[in-house]
Amino acid sequence: MRLLLVDAGNTTLRACAARQGRPGPAHIGPSSQLGDPRSALDEWLESQAPFAEGACLAIGREAWRGSVRERLRRLGCPRVFFVDHDGPLPFRIHYTPGARTGADRIANIAAMRSFGGGPAVAVDFGTATNIDVLGPEGDFLGGAILPGARVALEALRERTAGRLPIPEPGDPAPAIGHSTAECLALGGWQGHLRAVEGIVADVWRALGVGSTPLHLTGGLAQDLAPSFRLPHRVDAELTLRGLAALWESVGRAHAEAP
Image (tube, rainbow, N blue to C red; front, side, top):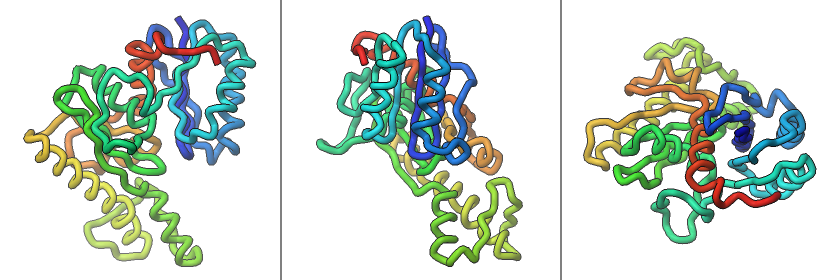
């Protein structure tokens, strides 16, 4: 059976067509390279019709849902399932009553559950850097959100009237910077990684374990992983795998006509 999986974040769109719940490597790149993210998603959906089973979606901006649903209806998609904090899920979310978390973070938890359960931690390097914690009983315990490293550097450049360069993640960063570019690479990228590592270490201590499986994902994961000091695995498709797992566990039963 053919299933569409869509992860539409704030600045990045990733999507693939899965068979038997296994997503492949097809994806949509950063929206900055594609123009309007909704237009890019519309074009991709157009290219995937006709549909055989349905679509499972994590939409970061709730205002998009109506237009995406309408596009899927027009294209003849038989059933859709939007992952949502308040929707049917195969695990509990340990959030304060009234607080909500994003669909992409829910999908990351579902992916880690499908790998064999918890505890485990996912770090999603995107517009924001999300740290998501899967508990030993298979629940979403919570985590942390940091401003994304590139977002922080861009904000710094904006506040300095564009005078500061933005180094790329792979630019050299010695222990002591000897130029503005090196200092920014050290503070902006390496400093961000050290902060994430510190939070993950605190999570492990809170869980009472020496370590857990640690999954790195998101648009910047491949670039940042070589400098990440904790043992980890990189999986660019982690969120899509989670969407596939959610479809299998609850989505197929609760999907609706668009």
